[in-house]
Structures are given as structure tokens and as C-alpha cells.
Length: 150
Image (cartoon, rainbow, N blue to C red; front, side, top):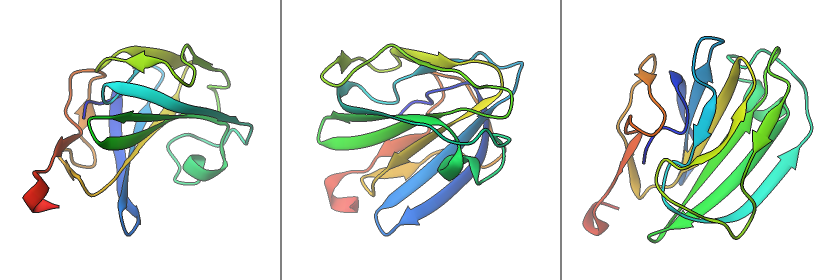
């Protein structure tokens, strides 16, 4: 699973018994193009209005304006969430439900400082650490576990 955005890994959290969230903060100097973390089919795109809290704060994941893409491929499902911030108040998404995407394909961008969260299940093993800088479409966020390891 590749990083969907350039930035710094802010948090790695277990959000449920079978779900992990990696949060990446994009400062104003990062490239703000967002990419798919895995190849597959976009099964859903959900836009939700919200607040414009500072994107580096934990509450931004739940409260800020966001666009969620659910991508299914190769027997797994990954959620990629574009999140607006205090200054970044415009989310652009080029994709819609039913679109097929390749690994690291452009899905859109967020203007100025923002955040991208990636949520995934236990079939993945996290490969990054908090504070690590990642590059969209290049840095590995997580590796697929073997069937025996799940």
C-alpha cells in the first residue's frame, strides 16, 4: 500500500478491532496531489461538509470537511480520506464510484495545508512510523500479510 500524499505521518491508530488509521499531514510546502494507495475499483465516493480545524489536530479526522474514497482490489478494501484544514478549504476529486484505478493513480488534490487518512484492515502490516516523511505514490505505508499471518 503506497502513500496517497506527500507529508509527515502524524498518527497511526487502531480505530477498531480490525481497522488501523494512518494520518498524513501536508504542510503548505508539500505537493498536494493525492493518489490511490492500492489499485482496484472505487466502490464509493462520499463527500461530507464539516469544520475547518487545523489539519494536524486529531479532531480534524472526525470533524473537518472531507471526501472519502473506498477502494477495493485484490481481496482487500482500503479507505482513503481527503480532509480539508484551516487554510485548505477546497477538496478536488477526479474520481467517482465505479472507476478503476491503478496503484498511485491521481485521484485529486487538496489546496494548501491538509490531511489524508488511510484506513485498512488486519490483512495489512504497517510499515511506517510516526514522524516519518512520505512521498505520494512511492513510500510504502503497509505491506500485505500472508494468509497464514492474518
